[in-house]
Amino acid sequence: MKLDPQTTPPFRADQVGSLLRSARLKEARAEYAAGRLSKEGLRAIEDEEILRIVKKQQELGLLAVTDGEFRRSWWHFDFLEGLTGVEATTEGGIQFQHQQTHARGIRVVDKLDFRDHPMLEHFKFLKAAAGSHVAKMTIPSPSMLHFRGTISSDAYQDQDEFFDDLGRAYAKAIQSFYAVGCRYLQLDDTSWAYFCSEEEVSKLNERGFNVEDLKARYARTINMAVSEKPSDMCITMHICRGNFRSTWIASGGYEPVAETLFQGLNIDGFFLEYDSDRAGGFEPLRFIQRADLKIVLGLITSKHGALENADDIKHRIDEATRFVPLDQLCLSPQCGFASTEDGNLLTEEEQWAKLRHVVDIAAAVWG
Image (spheres, rainbow, N blue to C red):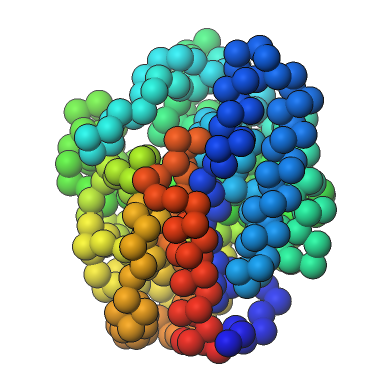
């Protein structure tokens, strides 16, 4: 069964972006880190592995393909480190449920800007590989630089100046990706899910943050970033509650952020995590007022390999139509399969089966 024809993303059957790194790629990265493989040698293997996974996505019936984030170690740090004024650190680490990531962080040490970013070349390779399919690029939301980074007072003493420069840097990023052919860009963001968690909000309060102020600042910065988005470019946002080695961080429904997200952000669609009761019900979708706003329901988990019952997923899609018309809904996994190069605890074949499951269910619902 084929899906109904679509020409613009997000698509009825879609995906968040990251894919499990192959054994060959992991070995190559280890060899490169040890100094036994050149940068050019690593790039050649990355190219070959990306071509392989792009072909696989096309065979599964996905209309949008990604490079699986195969050139990155992390879903966010690699991009953020490429911004002018940002440097990598070996401090920190993120605590998940029963899992701790290895130490890595970012620090703003100078005025922010976007120029000569290596991921522009990464996208150009993906677009060429995608052929007639849509090449989807994923980058962290501007919120993540503030949420996960530290800011040197030598670089910024004024918060307003920092967020203005951040918004302008991302606006340049969006124009730059558009210039090299990107028409489908996704902003990945965990901060909004933290704002939904009483436990995480309490931690933010203890750190001296005013959560309501953060919401307003983040929304304003995101809107500044997309303010000059070309009309034929789709920008979506993925809201994540944490995804590392099949674990998570935040719990809580979307109610605390729904009005800001669905009525306050000028983007084209949301990928929402809905694979467990940690995300709450569909009631917050009642805040959606725009008929052109797409909601991609993340009802298929990427955290384990067992396939969901297709009828259960169809029933949940039907439940969501109490608040959003079916024509505005799409289906995807709740997150990527490898937010870091470590990857979730399932096999590559189970990963492909999950994505095939998304395509098949979407075809049955919208076909």
